[in-house]
Image (cartoon, rainbow, N blue to C red):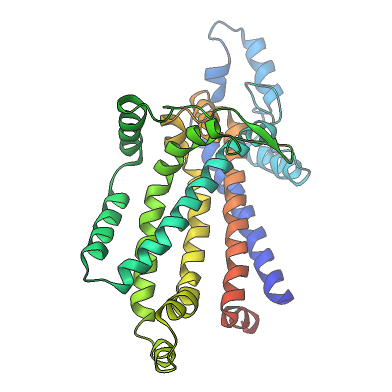
Length: 325
């Protein structure tokens, strides 16, 4: 296990280094922030002073090396607009985005696994076919359109839920969260459902496919021959085996939900990282964009690492294979 963990940590470090190079080069290839940040009426001396203060007068390779040196010390840059550490700006918005993402993943798992099991156990039934048809809709419909429809139905027509915003927050271990109050939950429900729909569909399809495969395996036939109840066979033997791919996909989707919640946050005016990154792209605030991309990359790496560890715990053959190679 230690060798497996060390191997995964080294791979994660290499991935982060490669991502830093790609992100830094990519962000610096699009536009020139000087054109946005400096007034056209500024003199050449003022222009040169601002460019030098941002470090933009240095060659790109030297800017990258300086970025790496500062990043090792925990400094990913200072925002051109807010003149504060870019990482701090993002971390201020992170709790709102994490809360939304966790709520979406909870909904996906809570509804996706039972519905997928039902569809897998009764693939030819009316309910099973209806579940699969609904899952296709969940994958196919655009997120922004579904969000607008949810607002039109539940906020405008029925008036049951608020159309946007986060609602009141309460400190939990020093972190502001909104799910501890009824009003906060009312604000959270619509954006969480909108963000969860695609993932519910994915989990349904994974659970159904895994259930269909598991029900044909010998260990299920043996369990039936031993006289175990259907509930025990499904709840213990089948569920344990279908959870392996679901854990991997849900972990990957959790990173994707955080990274790509921008549309949902924009539609529902949710004050997370999405609005900050949109504003930063508009004014080419490079440090904030780079910090956001690196944070997302680090989240993906950490989630993949955690998924590998959980995966190896569920299936020890994965760990043994990694140690042999």
